[in-house]
Length: 333
Image 1 (cartoon, rainbow, N blue to C red):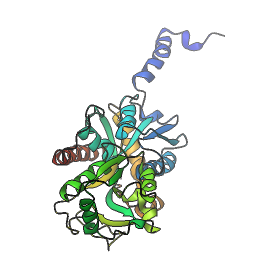
Image 2: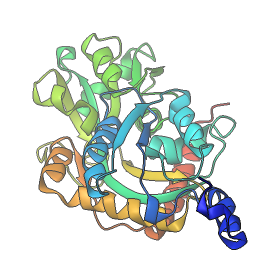
Image 3: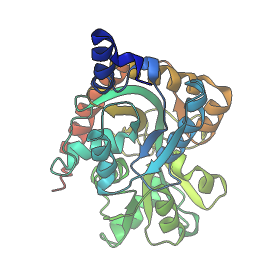
Image 4: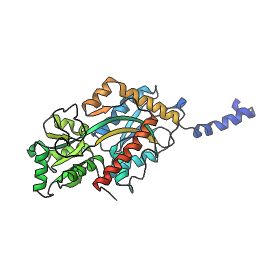
């Protein structure tokens, strides 16, 4: 039997045009999602950004209906720029997303523009701010160092012999440690690793003397007493560690730095798809279990951002971190 759609010229034209219409609007909210969404984490597993990505993947899917399924794919490398570039070049249909930290969406393009060739606010479709996190300066408990003055004294006395770990060249932990070394006049050598879990391991093995990293990435080792948290990088003390001073309080004047996590999609992702993803992300971030999981790991969850406020936030933070990069002289080609 002939297809009845082919009997009438108008019906035949509509039938032939249907695939073209679907291709023209690959991410229409009425059909979205109809397959698995991938959240790319541009770091190795087990760090703070990875945790945020997995929490979102677990809860965003059910909030987007029966077809909602979200998975995480880790793509570390190039100071987290590798994963960002992968998402930037992906099809703008809402099925490939990036959860990036300040390392990915501010420090990398500021410090290594030849590798991270993107503007975080302009070359992506911002979706939501996931949360903000303090950074902490930690040393191995076995080092015997109990305060920032003791650490500074050790670094100065040994004349640059010691190293500090970071979760990647050109990332926020690299920049934060370089800023500490400069402002404290405490020479140290940068030794990059692949992700927050590797930083913790390097500290425990005493391959390095200190690190400035997201508290969320090392909170377990801090609570277990394996690492000593000497100071936090924000202007106020962290509510989870109220007895730990800020770096400014500990004598490193003018020091202030924090990090954050944001969810973005490739540029030109349809606005209605971005809006749906924003609602799902904020919905997940309002759940008590999600908030508890992020909070106990050192991240302050946000559930009130819009695509527009996220874009403005990324633009402002990119400019701020550019200033810090210039201050430290950190430039990676």
